Image (cartoon, rainbow, N blue to C red; front, top):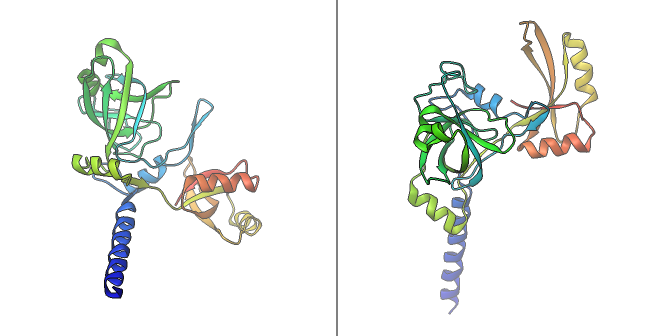
Length: 257
């Protein structure tokens, strides 16, 4: 009886270990064949367009959102997208306000039931109610070249330009084990100085017990050296925002190192 109990306990613990291990399946944001690591970091920072703030965040395979879809064509053909690529109106790509670059999504036109798969490589559309802006090719697949806009659903299929196998998506939905892309190493920029002495004073002023305050040397838009004071050590953007609110750092900008 004791032996049977011990075996049962070991089996249960093994199952729990395996389940937890599976439930932690995550993909770290990093370089892909399309987007450099630096671009990934830049495009995952909080940004503001037309007075509205957007906060890029993680995504889960199988996640579905609904809204209005649109398309953009020859006026943007050949111009740079947010991830550094040149926009190709004949490729199946698209723009999204918060999904990581190179996230693969299935867009479905809810009016005619047509669908297509695109790779996110740009930010937008910055129009109220619109959730995705498709390339000309993808828009044509959906019939948007005729209607202009339509109600759509956007389902996340994978990351880094790769689609997760369908059986895995179904399994993870069934047992509630999300495959997600995670973000880490967020920070707050509390000051920018042209002189190192000023940055050092701010570093001393904004030192906290559980965070690391650093001085990052970089260049401004005029190619002049500047010293940025960053408070680092937040594993999610939400925690950085909470810290900013709690310490009344209203002017601090979200950054990633």
